[in-house]
Length: 395
Ligand SMILES: *[C@@H]1O[C@H](CO)[C@@H](O)[C@H](O)[C@H]1NC(C)=O
Ligand SMILES: *[C@@H]1O[C@H](CO)[C@@H](O)[C@H](O)[C@H]1NC(C)=O
Image (cartoon, rainbow, N blue to C red; front, side, top):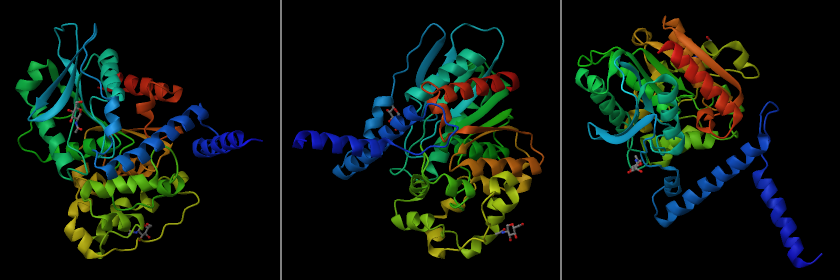
């Protein structure tokens, strides 16, 4: 064998080693997923490299942005709601009756994502098409340039702008049929702003539905059974989850290290652990193979410097029962092979215990981020159709 063919064989072996990811048996289109995941990992490494060279983080993701393009069915406009950029999708045909509305918050770990990204643009159009709804897809400033509470405040500012009689009338929206929805970090923000509305004397509108799609809901326990089981699963590994969470609050690596060790919550805040206690909040089948141990506390200085991770606006699972009682009909989607699975499951338990009506959809055969795969994977398409049908019937 010549040197060239030896190089080729070695390169192929290395490539195969990089691409091959062991996946659970019930995953459809496994090779397509492995290739997609490998491409995402290349992108993560490239981003880190570009970052070192001084380019903006995730600069390659700009390729995912699409301009606001109207067509026969949908009018798409980029505008500002209280200085926050939003993309608005409106059904084209004039309607004599008022329409329902979805206020949507994209995901991306609070560090990336944009309402202009192809998957979110697609989702907005699908909602218009299947629900005849007005869709507001909001942006918000991202980490590491901006830390909490900027993300929360941007979303809340744009939501409050929208939830005024005058603005709703302008868009022809029925104030009794509004849903706040978001996926992943957007699901976190959706849960947080929906809670905040309950205490806001200036907002008179009652939201009909909150829809939390594989949401992140707490930053206290990074060793939930779902974190342990899915630490290395596509498309969100435990390491990146912790990285997103810590950089949501600070660029100080000390918080990341403490979160990776799951020793970041000080003893003074130990009462908060009852709200993320998976031995009481997680249904039995998800506890299998795990033994609950009481948490190990971290130093007080981290929580003093970066109190955000103990803030209910960042960790909506930390809300009191009396607060939860006021929440609207809640739709929660969780995925089996997702580090964030147990966040959603525990919130569902807490809401039900507080008397909130909860509709929980658990996807047994996929990972984090299923809806952003709805254009490329059959499972994603299946779940999107199911989701839109549910909204069609309930909003
Ligand atoms: C989202 O995309 C728009 C248009 O492509 C860009 O101007 C804006 O800076 C992006 N927003 C964030 C928060 O990155
Ligand atoms: C979690 O729940 C278990 C079982 O009810 C209990 O023994 C444990 O003390 C709780 N831990 C915390 C930190 O709330």
